[in-house]
Length: 258
Ligand SMILES: NC(=O)c1ccc[n+]([C@@H]2O[C@H](COP(=O)([O-])OP(=O)(O)OC[C@H]3O[C@@H](n4cnc5c(N)ncnc54)[C@H](O)[C@@H]3O)[C@@H](O)[C@H]2O)c1
Image 1 (tube, rainbow, N blue to C red):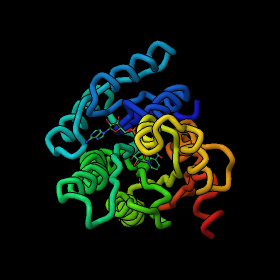
Image 2 (image 1 turned 60 degrees about the horizontal axis):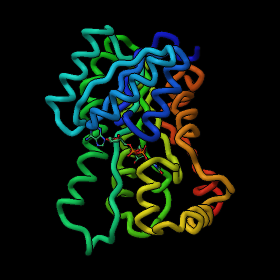
Image 3 (image 1 turned 135 degrees about the horizontal axis):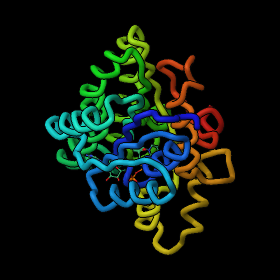
Image 4 (image 1 turned 135 degrees about the vertical axis):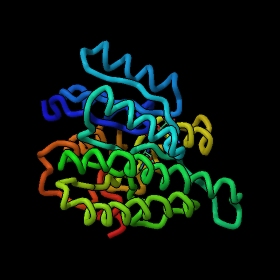
């Protein structure tokens, strides 16, 4: 029970890493607020947690819309009284070289991946400041540290989230709020599987083999691997970690590219 009775909000937790983290947090005794744009997926995650005996509550909100985020935070405070952990996980990928991508595509990835961290933080922080306690986990990526083909827009956002994490930590340390970042490598979530299918068709073996050339581990990353790291940052076990990047990348950053 590493998160016993902690009220935790995970954005984008209807799928992939967020969903896996929600399930893991609930197993450790947390009350998990599932947020997602996708109502069907978000509700399904909440039902899965509740059927396993955990506590979950779904709220549909777009993390790029201030009014929706504000209403979501107000609902959590009204129902549960506080927010102990905020996991800013929602995000989308952006593919293509700069001269090829459309302005709308650039704006979309910047908006969701950066503003989508700003707004939930903006509205949750006053409650954590009042409680003089809290843990915020921001989803960056190991792409913030390396160059990867055709990922200019996405890498921009994940580098920004890493920088934001450090500045946030300085501002909110006086309130006993910790802010850390997760930097996963390639994790086999529905999104990545879909991307691989588009790039490699039915030749899944070629797709997986190509991913493995980027890292030291012979295994591919799983959502559960990142969920374990998120659990550590959410819990008091990481109480001396402040403004830190935590890599879960099978050796991409400090292995192959060192
Ligand atoms: N999968 C990877 O390899 C990988 C690696 C590094 C970092 N990440 C990051 O991890 C996070 C989760 O990625 P994933 O692979 O689990 O993706 P995913 O697509 O499986 O899940 C993301 C969820 O976010 C939701 N979402 C998107 N826009 C939203 C919005 N505006 N408001 C609310 N919810 C929204 C989606 O509906 C989806 O359910 C992202 O920030 C991603 O950039 C993923």
